[in-house]
Amino acid sequence: METKYLENWLRDAHAMEKQAEEMLKSQAKRLEHYPALRARIDQHLEETTHQSDKLERLMTELGIDTSALKDMGGKLSAFGQALGGMMAGDEVVKGGIASYAFECFEIASYKALIAAS
Image (cartoon, rainbow, N blue to C red):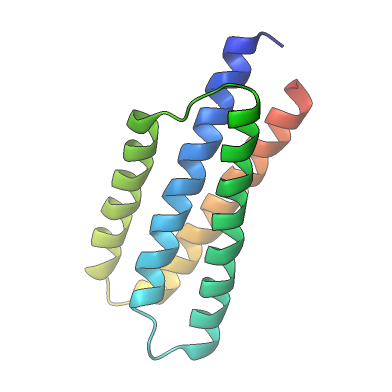
């Protein structure tokens, strides 16, 4: 695989993890009436932060910097999702569906990255 593609895909993966962090933080704040779900979201947030840290270490080892623009785009997308979810009466259900879809996207992204590298 060409190095520039690997660099871009790693930056995309990092931005994806930053987006996930923001989504999970936002969800956790609004789940005071669902303690079991809140605990699972907090656990997933810890896993996501660990994954982001691993990506940053790998990128540093490879001499690849993160992309502030991509990271900001991911964070803005998470903010938009949180804002839209707050308007819904069934926010917990919609948040769960959105999280499931995002997780599937994340898994597919890492599988493609692994297969291509």
